[in-house]
Length: 321
Image (cartoon, rainbow, N blue to C red; front, side):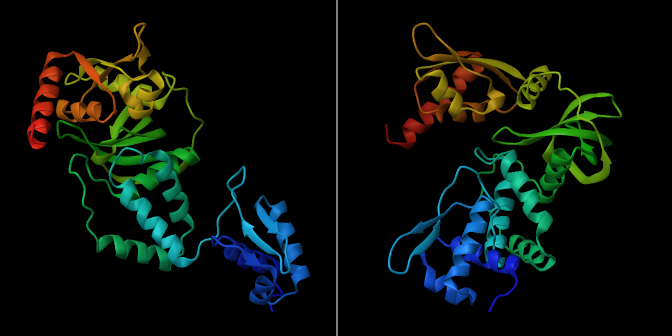
């Protein structure tokens, strides 16, 4: 019989998180308590924010349903390892749809993982090789989780950095946000040694170290970290401006392009126009434009127009056209 009420509540919650309906008698038998105690424990879970639904019947049943808020989850060892491995695999590559939120979740989970589970996660990941597209830089998940924890905790971050020209330096920063562009991760941070805001490609970062020193967040010069990154890329010499018209609506196109690409604007004749700046390969931008899912016309630059034509011809030939 389970006499420890907190322990019994956690055991009950773990059972209810299995996607099925539990008869009251079965729960009472599993927990070694009376049905009346089960009813009281269910009421306690509801007070804590867990949406437990009861059904009428001879035996009565309980199940956990979707609620208005996300209460804490109770994971067993296998579930915790599975989630951590999945988040690590996604965080190692800046793919569309896997952004800062997943990295924050990974940082929170690894912070509370017992040592035995942390070892299982590391061992499993070391024994596997992800099949990736090869168009994005690989990043150690530990690097992202350290950065995410310092962003969330407003803690100064020190790291080694290799610039695009190959020069090495040590940086002491006040991290602001991690930004995923779909191909790469960037850190937007205030560089204390240079007394200015900077963006850092995370795949060029090594030896990240959370110093433990707290700081009061500064005001970013632009409205968002994504906008600051876009302007930072625009200032680089190897960047180029582009203008693309889409037949789709503003909301549709905005939902299919990354934030760094800019915000589309409506056109009087219908559709919308996207203006932005990129410092990445034009081939990649051409692919991303084609993936939006509606017809489009590249207005500039001419090199991007040629790139899109070549891509279209290559895809047409591949399809037998």
